[in-house]
Length: 123
Image 1: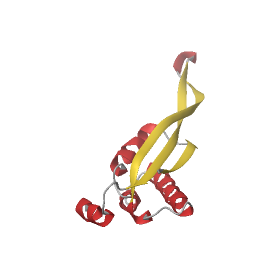
Image 2: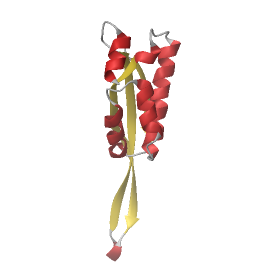
Image 3: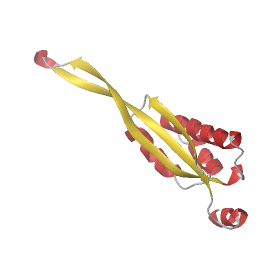
């Protein structure tokens, strides 16, 4: 059973967060948090909070083996946009799109007969 958490309407462009999601997809949750902790990007803080929330959801639902949860899905979808206009030369106006994103993370257990062996092999 996957344990999910979402952050809707995050005030950051999806493009800025997708490369961070690619870094943590398929990693153990604690390893993903360590990776994001040392990234200097603002989107890393947002993604880190969503992963922590998914871990909290797993603990609340009494998931067996919370230490063995893997980030199986980290999806960054586009949200609505604020549309603003900036004045330009000769009376023209350019549209500025302030983008939002929806961050969704799913955690699930390792599909292996012995999770300790699978974790030691993965490291």
